[in-house]
Image (cartoon, rainbow, N blue to C red):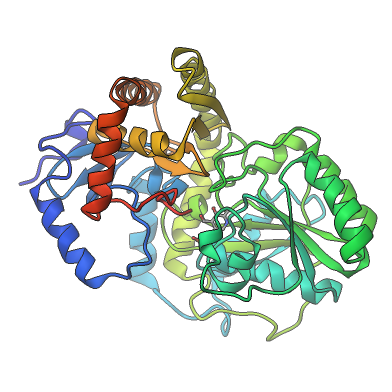
Amino acid sequence: MTTPLQARPVPDLVTPVPGPRARAHIEFDHAWTSPSLPRAYPLVPARGFGAAIEDIDGNLFLDFAAGIAVNSTGHSHPDVVAAIQAQAAELQHMSASDFYLPVYAEAAAELARISPMEDGARVFIGNSGAEAVEAGLKLARHHTGRSNIIAFLGAFHGRTMGAVSLTASKAKYHAGFGPMLPGVYHVPYGSAGLDEIEDRIFARLMPASEFAAVIVEPVQGEGGYVVPDDDFLPQLRELCDRHGILLIADEVQSGAGRTGKMWALEHWDVEPDILLTAKGIGSGMPVGAMIARSDVMTWGPGAHGSTYGGNPVSLAAMLATIRLLEGGLVANAAIRGRELMDALRPLTDHFPTLVRDVRGKGLMIGIEFDSAQTADAVQLQAFERGLLVLEAGDNAVRMSPPLIISRAEAETAVRIFTEAVAHVAAHREADLEELESEIKAGYATEAFGASGR
Ligand code: PLP
């Protein structure tokens, strides 16, 4: 009989990592899976509970990565598990594109209720973040009759053809796939980008009247957990209003309570025309949604749909997740986020040559280092000590734990992370050599911001 995870301290490593089973599994994996998958480090998860993940060797990790900011309610939250089980026993699929699936309308009504759109919203539900982005793109073009889009440098919007054309966090995402979707213009993220929109794009390249939408992450995710200056989003809203351009907020990573408010845009009191959600809204079940102001959702039957979009089991998980978020997890994200920021900020004083910045909102925290190699090495050292974090951007490591974390778990994470940074500060050359050998062994992907999202 396996020991219940709840009975063990977290973290609790019982082998050096990766352990023997993990090593064997990684070899098997390398023979069969698409080599396009970027791998951050050699974790082979088997089961999870709360903020703990056990690998196939029985090592227990404290999870501050949450499956790339997804497991908002923690791993296998009992309410989410019960909702999934009950729905799976009733009805697993009956395409909502063709039939009036009750849970689909119920989920749409809930998303509209919690959306920041004051005058009402309607909802299209899909299976992922990228699908929400594609739906937003299509609706923006359809509604405005215009085709061009503005996006931001550093943005990540997904990997399907339209979404990857908007993505501009790493050139590698475009390599070999061109030409990208035409009519996409990128400008710097933050208020400086607004001048470029007016002075470079609208004045010299393409008039404002040709633009359907601006798509923005209110806090950039894969770009490095970048919080914009306070003027940026309100001024962007104003610019869009002035030119009749739709504002699409991609809250796939920043939404669902992660920043300590349901939607990150709420920190700046800005209302989008279209809001995209996925990741944390389904606690790990595949679900994403495009929420649009009712007067923007003007397309007719057949304009868009999806066989699986709004799968009832995923929607049951999403409804349970929303109840938990509103029932205290959003508030917990705000409190734990403040504690974590206060505890992590001194790293810039303690390791001034290595740690350049600690920033974030709620439980979306980025620690920026002097180089990608340092960030990689810290990530690996944290893993070897039982703490899961993930790189982001060029030089940053992100903390995106489940929203259920306790104060004690936050303290443990800070202690281990500080040890990892101290180790890299003291043994930089040896740590970089170790990283090099992990990359050679195929356990991690070279210089990619390995998580790749
Ligand atoms: N948008 C943002 C802001 C993201 O962070 C991501 C994924 O990381 C996506 C879109 C794409 O989501 P998915 O991987 O579910 O397609």
